[in-house]
Picture (tube, rainbow, N blue to C red):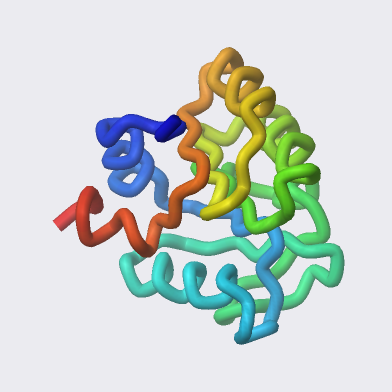
Length: 137
């Protein structure tokens, strides 16, 4: 299953300006670090979400989604599949507009709950990969 149609991917890439990146730290070897930098280079505001609440790419970090004191458009999830459903539920709780599960992060039940709550959800995809195909020009 593709877990998102192209129109949803286009919508998230074009319309979501503030991306909370769950699992983002200053570890340059992790995919989250490079994807967050990519999103920044495309004009998106990134918000690091990690228990250490580190500042990454010049942006203040927060220990949890609930700690972010401003609206978040998309929650980009870089945690293991078994933890991702809880993050999706938290995204619903903060009134995010979209949830994006990165490559190899799959939770069909979370997809059902999240979309039923009215959020757009993309799963098992990477925005840095999808951008050249479906992102804004």
